[in-house]
Image 1 (tube, rainbow, N blue to C red):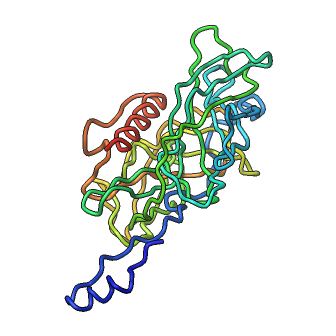
Image 2: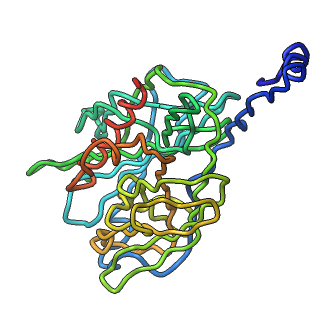
Image 3: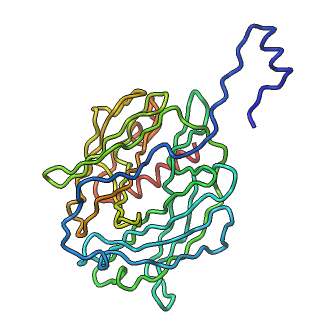
Length: 313
């Protein structure tokens, strides 16, 4: 626990100094919300053809990071490429950041490996590591008892039946986590979503924290949900950020827009918006290199690479 000892307090008083403020404890839940709004998707396909539950197991299971439900998802009934969702949680008493997994296998009913993913990071809340002069923010953190998501993609090449044959997921946890993050001053709270005439989803948000945020729009995500809160599909929110430049003062409002969900063959009226943000000056990829382009697969690879860069800062 961060406390100033009586001796140090006496020294501060004697010299007329003020002790450095202690960062607030990390509580998570600072970048996402479940929203209800207009229908997203074409309704061309039945949900049963776009989603299937998978059994999930962890090789060398961790009592601290249990895995719960898992799902295979796809945007239409004509593709075998599979978006994966695994629900996980931090069952411990210490906040963790850079929670990562490796050797994720999608298997069929006979236990044969259909796809092997090298791994990546858990999508969680935004924690602050590093120093006050050079803070490192990462949205791979889970507070004690907080839930997060493994969001991955298993691409199917011509003739592969990944979605059709998928029955289970097996993966391992990486042990290179970091603990005791601080709570960053900004907090971006999604407040509503709308659907444009072109079918793009626009998510509005407010900075309900105490400091300025830099919106890193091309790494934010949405997870479409059914009425029971189970996932239907996910993707990156990546096309437009408002205001221009993405700087959101405390109390300020903004929005991000995603332009690809019109291709989703089902329909959803609920989604979880997950916002990726930084603090100015940015230490994110947005400040260090070109914005990742292309598909969700490209952006997922870029996001994982950015988290690794921050981890080895």
